[in-house]
Length: 236
Image 1 (spheres, rainbow, N blue to C red):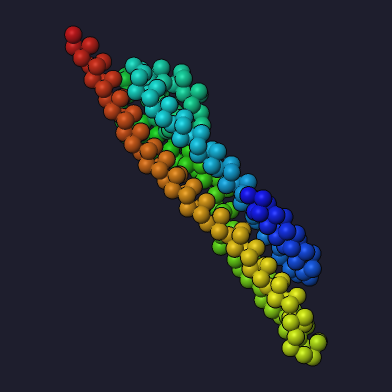
Image 2 (image 1 turned 135 degrees about the vertical axis):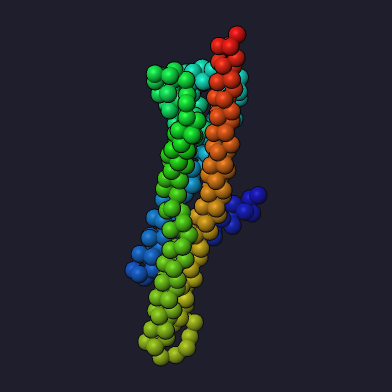
């Protein structure tokens, strides 16, 4: 373990020295890549925390929904499970359901309207989960090219140093080659976590979207069961 600490210490010092010896263009490229990387990691950590809480609260909300006897009972406790996108699906349908109950007939007459309300709620929740996610795709697509620009510039600098020195020596080309390699590596370091996180987070969001569709069908079944119970009581 001590060996790895020493390796990280001395390796980090060498990297700092290499970066400090780069030119102005390479420093600008590295700072740009650092900004992309920091913003991306902030989004990644925020999204993972949001998805983790949404997954946990969704399970709890579904259990509470299945235990409830009336939709009004679910609506009364829905705020406790607010991080879950299923709450938005339920509230979108419940608003339409309650509006129909307050009408002249006193019972929901259009389940398709309730379903559309739930679809609107689901769309709003998915949009909330996807907020800032395109930045990860932009980072994954753009940062390798920014690093490539630094690579090309470093090679140009290397050839310029070779022409100035008048001899093909390692001392003449080493600074430009080091700039090229550093910016290439920095571009990959910024892009790889972004593309991995974009795909994993996107998969989680698609899972929530499918789960919201299933939950909306479960709500419609509950409404139909309540209607059937009300009709049976009236006939008695």
